[in-house]
Structure formats: C-alpha cells, structure tokens
Length: 266
Image (tube, rainbow, N blue to C red; front, side, top):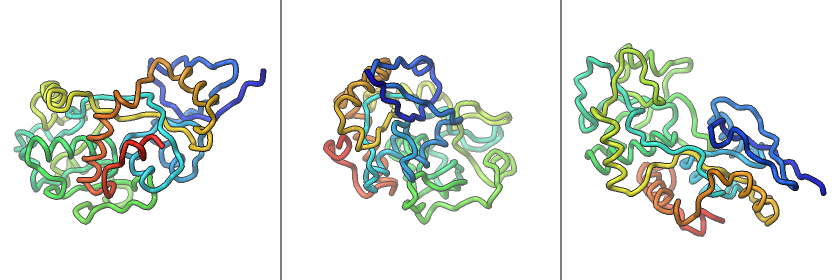
C-alpha cells in the first residue's frame, strides 16, 4: 500500500506533538516558528498542502477566492483580554478609556486584534475607528489594505519600544506581558468569563486548512480527520465562533460581509 505524503505547516502544541500517520497518509511537517509565519506563504503561494491558519486570515482568504478548504480542527483557542497591555503608570483604567488612544498591533488583520476590537465595540462602546491604530506589517492576504484610521509604523520600528517611549498608549502582544506593563483589562480572567457568558464559547484563533484540490479527495480528508483526531470538532460546534468572527471581521473592514455557512465550508 502506497503512503501519500502531504507537506504541512502545523504549530507545536501538546495535541500536535505526535500526530499519528495513517497507512495511506503522512504529513511532512515544516518547522516554522512562530507558526503565523506560515500563513502568508499559504494564502499567497499555496506553499503547503495542509496548514494551520488564523481564523481572520481564513475568512479574508475565502472572500478573496483563494482555494483553501477548512478542516474543523482547532489548533489554538484562548480568551484574548490578557494580550492588551499599557504602561503600568498609564492613566488608562480599563478598555473604555481606549477611545482616542494610540494602540499598536502587529497587523490590523491579526486574529487577536480582531477579537479584541470586537469586544471593545460590543461591550465597551469603543468602535474600531475611534482608535488610531498603528501596525507593523501587512495582512497575510495581499489584496487587503488597512482602513484609513490605521497608520503603518516606520520600517524597523519596535512595538514595545514605541509603547515604552510614549508613541503608543497601549498595544496588543502575546500573553507574556512585557516588563513595566500591565493589562488594560483590570481582571483579564474575569473579562474572559464575561466573553464566555455573552457569546457561549472560547474564541478560536487557529484552525487547519487544506488545498481545495486535495479536499475533494475523500481518502485524503478521511486520513486528515484521523491524523487530527485529538483536535477535531464539527462544523456545528464551530458555527458560533465562525459566525461571530465573520461579524467582527465585516464590522472592522477585514471582509465586505460575513461569509455564509456554505462559503465557509466550500
């Protein structure tokens, strides 16, 4: 029996440490750290057969007609509020104080930023265009252009240095709060519980996509479902997260309108 080999870019997590091949399918995994460095090559070049992908990038890519198909396998999910930080001596007391403040984010299309902007608008009365955003790189989808209320930092600028130097009032990082900073949300854990209570799920950051030509092969998809069994869920289970992500993306100008269920899973 011949074993088919697919190229793959998948992050290193406990649930992906030992992805089990099948007798007919094996993943040749590229080592890419951080894994978000794989997203642009995937949507711009279809460089991999199988790739982890941020949900905002996926929705933008599908709208742009890029031939990728979603596999309902969750690679990363988290409450986002701990990623938004400001200097410890900042007058900012909470998220409602961000209106009019200068906030930095790696890219306007970054999924953590998308979820946080949605929370700021829905729960704290701070719409996306009330903040002058500063970004540091392009979106993964090459046709996207930042909205007019977004400014690109000068080449070589560092988001942490700009925050410490007073050029930014707040910024979105990972979950390691830089020295001298504190979270904008006074109690990020409580804010995460508020999100769960309001929307009914933990925000999904990364899923898995497959080249659409491969997704039409039932044997390939069966093999991938076996390989990703530990992370696999169902389209119905993901529906609330994808629907809200679509609404937030559309409200923020990342896509023109939320994708239909048929568009998401085509």
